[in-house]
Image 1 (cartoon, helix red, strand yellow):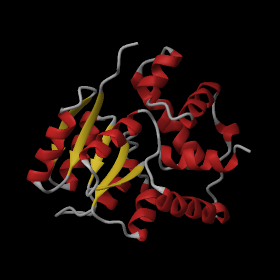
Image 2 (cartoon, one colour):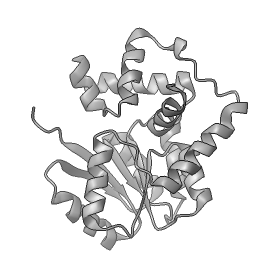
Image 3 (cartoon, helix red, strand yellow):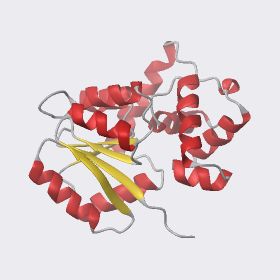
Image 4 (cartoon, helix red, strand yellow):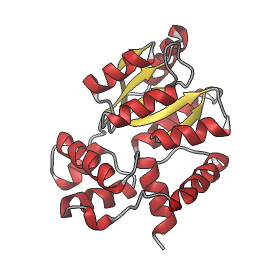
Length: 215
């Protein structure tokens, strides 16, 4: 089975860093940077136009916070995997990123080899978070139990249930499409629908919720 190409959009206001990251990503043939943006607003526009598999997003942007960019993208039903790529390891930033719909959190001081490995894990559908971040996320979702965000799987159509099951296994839209023999664009439509029905902001929330409740 041939390897599927993973498309990436970079949103960071430092041109030199963007260029360096783009060159590093380009060294791995399975990744393709299809766009880059130096502001949050430009990033939102490109994300809508390109619908990349992965969005690498910094928190500190000149115009608007990357945390607000996540919220805007999820409100526009962008299903790309949004990975924060930042220098901030602040607990509140991590919680807000998850709350707004991020799918992972990487720090810029990581080694290049670890960065590429993390990207590959994201492409394979894995949730990117270390033990500390994982605990913060579990606690955050546990604290949401008193909210009205019921996750009723009975609301899903049979096809959405199939896709939900594959999402919990970490499959990307492309791999889900291949397994179900449907178009990638069709998978995106179903993912948008089931996220809305189940009151989830991201695949990360689905994965963490599933891990908590599968037993």
